Image (tube, rainbow, N blue to C red; front, top):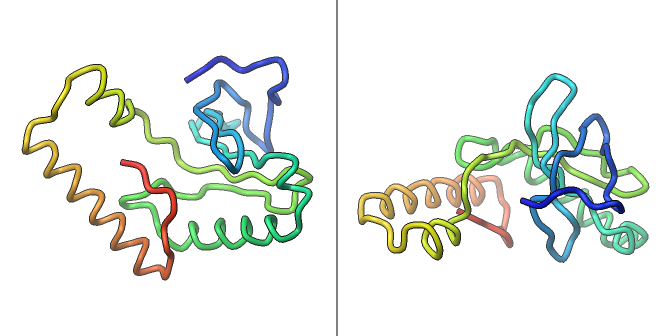
Length: 141
């Protein structure tokens, strides 16, 4: 998690941004809070991609598909504006360290029971994703 930079927006939709969670090929992901106090993750599309209608249509499809998955084993889609000048989607925020942080820096290899529990959760998530007819491209434990 990183502090917001001078070029980062202060708000996206109804969400006040708190920090940067990360970035990818599609855009920036922020930690944010709703006016009612719910902590969420907001993915903001890169401006150059937002200018491409083909990309915007793929983003609309991604948001529609993610809404169908549910949220038992995946972060639920809570809000989105796929028609904004710069499209975005807000999902539930799942607090905790990354698997890379836990294994690579904090604890090393996990106990077998922990690995089995993690694997079972991932298997349930994949089952739900595939049941919704979605081919995943970005699954993170």
